[in-house]
Length: 177
Image (cartoon, rainbow, N blue to C red; front, top):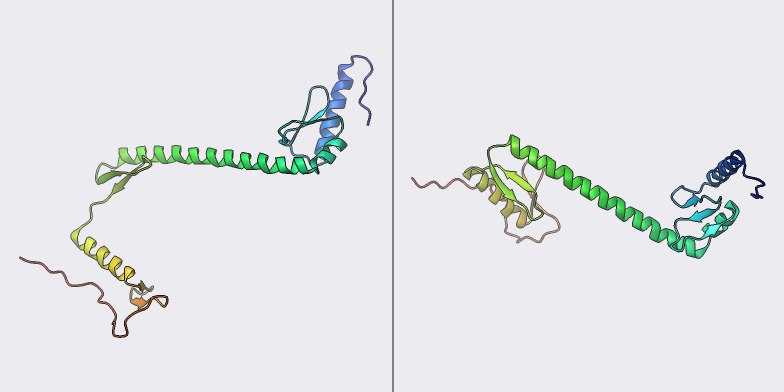
């Protein structure tokens, strides 16, 4: 493919540029991997040394090379890291605005500040609920699992004493009046 021009015809220059862009697209080269320079040549954006090529065919040969493939790992790894960082910051901004909005609408409850700076609104726990949670945690840590019906069954991966029997649903409340 010859790209030598005669004269300063701007129209012909535009036609050549369009043809080169069409060549890039026809060879399925992503826009973020190669660019068409002002002088009509192609530059590889993946490789750190930014090699320049006269034709799309030469760019295609370069894309199959070992240095380019190594550069692609680095290029797309860095691109993914950047996208993850952007997503992370968007999420942090979203959480911050939601916390502020929740803080304005929620007037009750205890507010605790987490290590990452976000706030969490906790409802006050009744004595009965605290007992239920303690009982649940005690049984879970002892190797019992709760099935769908609410009954406690032995976890088959945990060793139990042979004389151990099924636990009570909830110990009776010991009130001293």
